[in-house]
Image 1: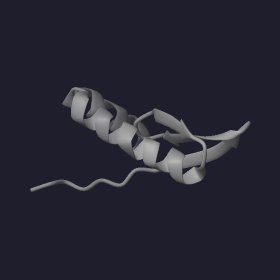
Image 2: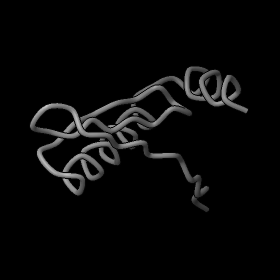
Image 3: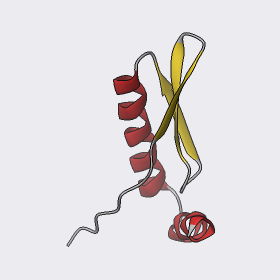
Image 4: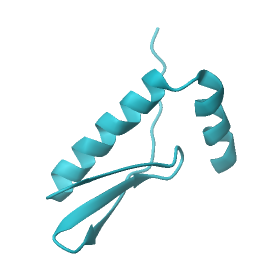
Length: 65
């Protein structure tokens, strides 16, 4: 069974691009459009969750709750 979690995506314009941030995990990305920044952030969060130690993920999540 897969657990589903929802995370916040904060996206803001910076110069000619967009910065995206997931504050719960302190993971960031960027893109040339809002859609690209969002997709890149989603990929970065997924990669972080898959590659980071479970204790690292849980430690970051507890800091936001």
